[in-house]
Length: 241
Image (tube, rainbow, N blue to C red; front, top):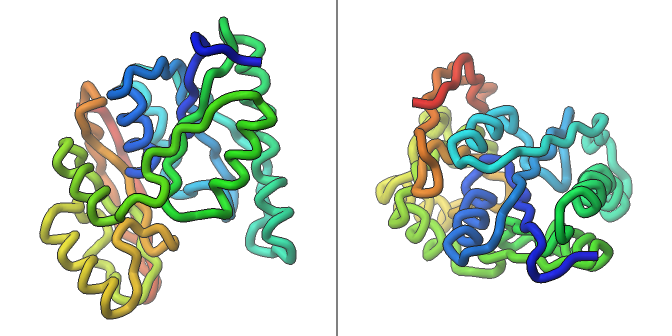
């Protein structure tokens, strides 16, 4: 279905993990011709949910065309079979990739993904790539979380926390930029409460507002919404500087 000269597709939410996978692909010289963002309308087992609408601005800054997939509500808040749910959620993405595979010269050579530790997500993306006959590039997979975070900062990624949902993370983390001090605090929270340093368990979600793969920084204006235990940024305005 694809060949070595085909296009690479980057699964992209705008968050740090998918952005790092994209950046690593570009650094390796992979021919990334599309970013693909899935916009769940409700909660999701497979996809990063908050602020995916900002992926368009990020794509403009990166300079790679964005394909946006807008499925119906996945109904992930009322699930009895998590495995079947993940399979169902993958269907609109796979359908979009099949269309791209037919459309792009040489088809799809491979897909990039930002999975770190989620066997649930990665096994499904691997199976999808097998069905599409393309490769999977997952450079974060089972790497040391602190080393990954340090590498992102060293490369010049500016990462904002846009949602928190874990004991130990209070409202002050909303809108915070991840830096060396934040990582040190996250390590302490990991030891005390089990908070994952990269938020892999859904403890927090991020948006990359600047990086070496971006021509212009994303400037955000926002308000914080906090319910006492979890919160999110409500972006009121966003633009490229």
